[in-house]
Image (cartoon, rainbow, N blue to C red; front, side, top):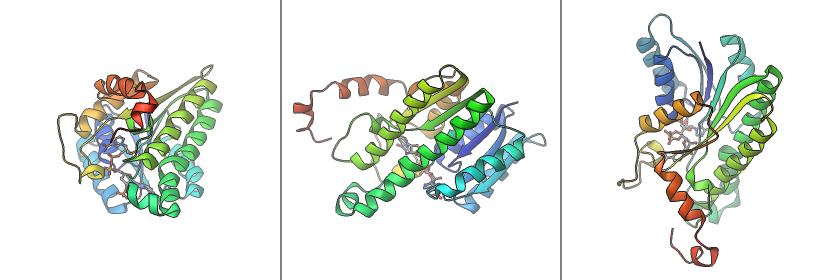
Length: 247
Ligand SMILES: NC(=O)c1ccc[n+]([C@@H]2O[C@H](COP(=O)([O-])OP(=O)(O)OC[C@H]3O[C@@H](n4cnc5c(N)ncnc54)[C@H](OP(=O)(O)O)[C@@H]3O)[C@@H](O)[C@H]2O)c1
């Protein structure tokens, strides 16, 4: 039975992953910031999972890096060890507000990049010592190339992607997989203000892909898969043309 630690568990995508893993009989340790929403998620999973479900929880503001080691310790104590870590929390900062304020920019980098660096490092060190495990984190297609409409968020996600590539290289000789999830547009509370179109996916579609990618110990995963082709094209547009586009 797999023991799974999820950071940002009340995110629409992570909650959908938790429901899928719960149905497969996994033991879960869920970390989220909002106590009420976390309790509701736990109750829902407990009802669905029945008497054999193990759902442990902790609340934390993950931008506060000093909480991280304690959360890993608590999860290992509660589940008797860990097999999978999924890092999913995040914010979509207002790009214009970031341009006007370095503090707003750094806050966005703190939660979307530096907190990931801290959690990924702790997960990597623990799984390296143990000799196995799967570390997964949700980056984004936005991290593949900087563009004017969201380059603060994109830069944070780009850092997560590069950092995970390095970790994967470091851990290649061990039985530790590092799975970088890059979703495209997903219809969640984070994107509630956006008009939806043909490229948009539902959180459960992304969750299905995440659970499968982790089971297969994949490397970089675009979700849905067609984003791999879109981003291949976007990454290959020459910069002298790209810088003039309104994206
Ligand atoms: N939606 C998309 O189109 C899309 C595309 C690509 C990648 N992603 C990524 O997918 C992941 C999940 O996002 P989502 O779309 O599922 O959005 P969501 O439902 O809005 O979830 C975001 C979650 O992050 C949590 N969070 C934010 N700041 C936090 C902090 N300082 N400490 C702890 N938790 C914090 C939020 O908690 P509170 O409820 O307490 O605010 C919320 O549970 C994120 O990393 C996001 O960047 C999303």
